[in-house]
Image (cartoon, rainbow, N blue to C red; front, side, top):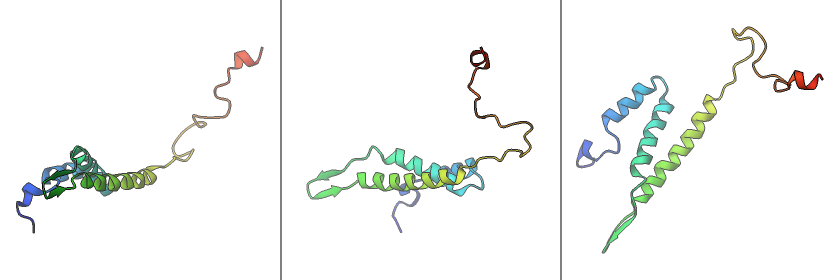
Length: 108
């Protein structure tokens, strides 16, 4: 148990609820949003030493950043999808071989 309860947490209940509301049914995206918030919040903290007291505040930022980068790669890998041709689309694909060729120039 930590003294201070809600005053000492990294994220507030409102921030967590906002992330859940922004990405309903997408837990990893909501978590990514919260990790980004933590990274931005703790990025400015530096290591401090005053007499015998030493605080490694930068270590927290590094930890959150590593978690953020790992989850971002995972989310990006899951969200990559290429729609199949013919999935309700009429006509040929938008991109095709020779689409940048200018017939007026080549057929002279």
